[in-house]
Amino acid sequence: MNHNNIVGQFVAWADQVQEATAAGKPYLLGEMASIGPQGLAGVSDVFGCALWSLDFFLYAATINITHVLMHMTDVGNQSMWQPIEVGGIDPWVRPVYYGHVVVDTLIGSANDTSIAEIDVTTQELQDYAGEASAYVIYRSNTIYATVLINMKEFNSTDTETSDTQLNFTVNIPPAYAGNNLTVLKLSAPGADSFKQVTWAGLDYQTDSGLPSVAATNDTTFVTVSAGGQFSVLVRDTQAVVVLFNSSAGVTLNTASAASSQGTSSSSENGNTTLLGTTNSTSGNSTDGSGGEGGSDSTKSAAFGRIMCNLPLMSVLCICTAMVLGANSFMFG
Image (cartoon, rainbow, N blue to C red; front, side, top):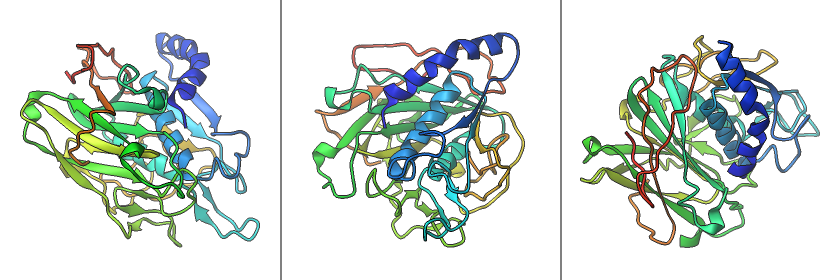
């Protein structure tokens, strides 16, 4: 659960990605996992790994990696679900699967998605260094969502206080002033949780494996200020997706994999599962992958980015970010 570690691991691939792009070839990662080859109990099969997978996939997209293939076996702790009984434990959907579902929701099926990382390092407090990340998602020429990830460890036995949350302050175009944006949460009682994981008020850890409405729906809304700013409190060990298009939220519709060319996460055993998204599943996927207005002046991460004047590609790409001030960025 550390963004800096993820970035460091991708350094070895970055030059190869650039060479592939220059040659007009897609770059794929195969047999990926949080811990190879089979994962580790208490690490790969708990909620903290869901945040890892979300950050891993999104960062991969920003450097033009077009596909990520996740290693899966019937007994491996790193697999998104356990399809058979193992050690007296019935088949179940592991928390890491939720990271795939969130990515699928963000990519969609229209093959027009771009993802860029928002640099929050200069905004982080020392106790959150490397444990916060953020991304902006574009559909065509329009901002679709902002993803805010707080990976500071919070376990199910910990107590929530004002010190266990990070306030992300986002500057966006003033044209959005007055808009109510939908805030969807990826959450669980803690990083060590096996169960009670929810995404946008949905629960995938059901007997059938099909999504159902969770007991608690923590979806909220945040209003953009007149100056084009909103703030969202993100609890430690939690991720938030702020949707700019409320009509394209997450539903209980289910669909199998469809073909397009976004960065996708997929299993290598050919299994197809169902998911809850409005726009079917993301490109080349076989696994189904795919706020409160607040002010906490002591823990504020203000950020944004400038969108380069570049044509959108059929693969997910990162565009250059530019600092506009000491403590502020802005979406272009």
